[in-house]
Amino acid sequence: MSELSGKIGKKSFLARRKERDAKEKDEAKLYWAQAGFHRPLAGFWFNYALLLIIALPGILIIGVVLPSLLPYPDALGFNNVTTSMLAPIYLFADFGIKEACDKYISQYSEVNPRKAIRYACFYWYYQMFTGIIQVTLISFIAVTILPKTNMSYAGWFFLVYIMIQWPGTPALFMTCLEGFHRFDKANVIVVIQNVAIQTATQVGFILLGRWVGTIYPFIGPLMGCVMGFIFGSYLDDIIAMFIGAYMFKKVLEPFGLKLGDVLRIDFDKELMKEVLLFGGKVLPSGLSYVVVNMVITVMISSWLWNYSALLGLYSIGAGLVGALGVSFSTAPPISEAYNNNKQELSLFIIRAQFQWWGILSLGVLMAPLLFLIPDIVVKFAPNYAGVNEMVFPLFFGAFILFPTNFAGTICQACNLPQHSTFMNFIEQGSRVFFYFLALSPWTFRAWFGEPVAYWMWLFAEAPAYALKGFYGWYIIRKKLFPGVKIGFPTYQTLVAPFICMVPFALLYTFVMKPFFFVIYDMSEAASYSLAAIYLILILFIFPIFLIMPLYGWLGAWDAQSLEDFRKAALMAGPSRLLVKALYNAGRIGYKLSPFKGKFIVPFERAMKEASEITALRQKNELNVDKKDMNAKKTNSSVPD
Image 1: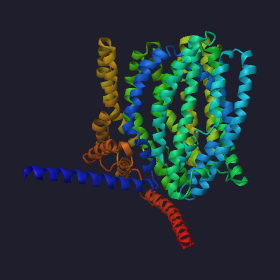
Image 2: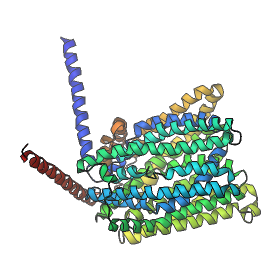
Image 3: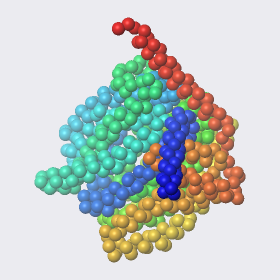
């Protein structure tokens, strides 16, 4: 009898669990249709459970691919030179079309979805047409002009890399998914592309390129690896485009639209004029960046000793600290809110993005990125030993990069692209000045010697970012929100995350790093397992059991930020259980906090405006349902 009752109890528990899961999934579908910060937040957390899948190939690439397939950082340096030289041509031909379509698709996706699709259609055909011209032009340059210059070695690199410009539409469906606020699906593509597809194509074609280079000595293994690396990067973009098309097809169905609507020519002269005018305002901004990058590349290749190796090391170091710029896809919801006269909702999204940048960048990532991971990278790949000394100077620029770029994102989203352009002019002009000051043979190098010039080179980005940021936030205050206090959440963004970070900086420096070195010296194979354990601790265990509760106990949450977190947890798909654990940890910490209710981001008016946008979306979906019902009635009334 007791056994039977136990089975009944067990069955009822499973039934309750199944019922609860079904209810939460229904809630998540409802929340995806509601305007608010919870949507970009959920898009970020959607991939949380997949971080381990991303991280483990990262260990493989750092521990095996870098030292064996790309034994010298020169290969990465050559790749950077190639992309920097071609980027101005690519960007000029693109004419700011992507940024314009980002803005308009986001603005109309819910209030007028059929109009939003017309912008995607124009994006598709514009890129296809200009891509043919670019492939022809760059191929001609690579075959006839480049062999006569000191970059003759890069001819084949140019020919391989130019293929990415046709069809030239890999980013289209990512733009559409984000514009329709399906950040979950967009992030799934990022994970699939960066883990499964990119790893397979890049490693596979690096091996193929090295094999070809070994057979044909005039190519050589190093050049073969670079060409394989570039081609693998192209191929993974194409595969990801088809996956994005399939996902976007599903997103269109509730609006009564089809994927074929994107491919059918359905735009007029007025739409073309609108997009090209906006793109023309944005173009100088992006063009200034890539042109300056090309000028800086010429400076580096002319004045920096052993430039290909140092550029390769720089790319690894910058990639590591670049994670501090973690952000969400907030341009679409800001554009939707501000351009539909929802100012308070725009401000709330801006404040919430700052708060989460502080939690993730300062509270979770800064300590391991500065005090642990670079030394592990160097241990696995000794030829990349210069990376660890680059990380700290590069950190200063990386840390202020997010608030600087976020200002430009806000200006573009709120229909002030010209000021985003001015911001980039300030940044790029400053970059040229500081790089010239650091590298030229007439300035720091002549005054203080090569060591000082080397360190100045590493710091050269930071002052340019700072100047850009000062101008950007001045414009946001004066032009977008005049007379309104933006209300930067200093405590939630900087103070509380810094307090959370300090004990982990000590732990990584004095316990975990020395222990890793000991294990590595005993057994290199065991060190890979320990690195995997460290990643699990950094990404999952520490945030769930220590960082989120401490952040909550410090009183850094409020009712609405926790509610957005709760909604995002239910919307996080495969990561739902883990993100719910994070949410519950933060909620419990906040519940026990002696500082509860002392640090609140204003939200009441913002939530009212969010509900108004949601009502517009529901009205559009209702109209689609009525049309479908009328069509069915008409068809049923027609005699056979």
